Length: 325
Ligand code: FDA
Image (cartoon, rainbow, N blue to C red; front, top):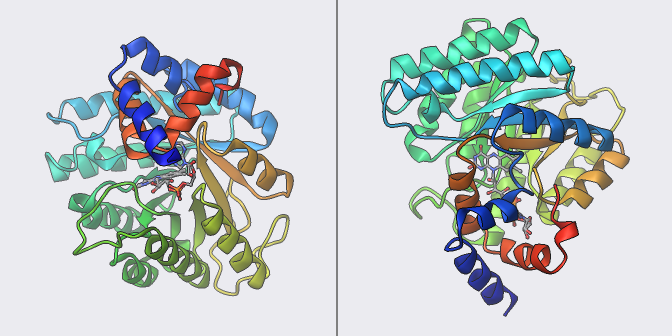
């Protein structure tokens, strides 16, 4: 019943004028520009959070469009350094041209990772749909081989291949592998992906364990209590936790601006109470901060992919003072 109510609200909201969608989504998007992202981060850092910044936009239609993302991320690196904010970057490989001109796309990514490296900053390659899984993983391997270790990717628990990818990546990257593990937002075909909720949770949890066993840095990106609880148990059973030096014999090098072998990550505006609780317990918590001119497209996608947001929309309408990140 609640699901149906939520779906109806979402269906109505996405047909509303842009200003209304903007008002609803101000909880999930920092704003249209870098200044708005800096403002939110300065506020949330008081809650003990650190950040990863996403310039909104993904698959582009001409390689020239990639120039915008490259130059905007260069501004982000400068702003993070200037304001001394504990933050790194999240980028979408297709926004850098990976699906249009692979060589140029890879070069664009390398240019940014190299520039970020000069500022001791980490770059996360977000994982998009299955068309780019191989290339995204390969980009990380190539960059590590070139000595750029300040880069890591995201793996999606829902994909059958992920558990093998972790084993393969361990061979290539050793314990300098640095992952974000999430369920995966793209609804992939049944032939390559788990479909049911409990199978996805189970597979994601198995990936968390495999990453921890491999000695990799493991960022757990989920708002799902079943995944968070599992991760907490897995960390505990390996002697890992807040303010404890990573005890794993095969652990990678200590990482600048990172936690003791792991961290928790959440999206801006989602599950703030759980994030704050984890932070209070001493866990490193990172908030994913999307900003940019493409806020409208991002918001519509978020609303469509997660109909449970409908309840939050209703709450924001009835109690507008609660509608803040
Ligand atoms: P689940 O969907 O079960 O959500 C648990 C609860 O959290 C829900 O009941 C809901 O209330 C709330 N919730 C979850 N998502 C919400 C949202 N968007 N808005 C409002 N409420 C929400 N995926 C991918 O394919 N590639 C990637 O690179 C990334 N990167 C990434 C970074 C970070 C920091 C996070 C947190 C997530 C991603 N994801 C991603 C998305 C991820 O794969 C997944 O789709 C979502 O996190 C939802 O799954 P949960 O595990 O949160 O559980």
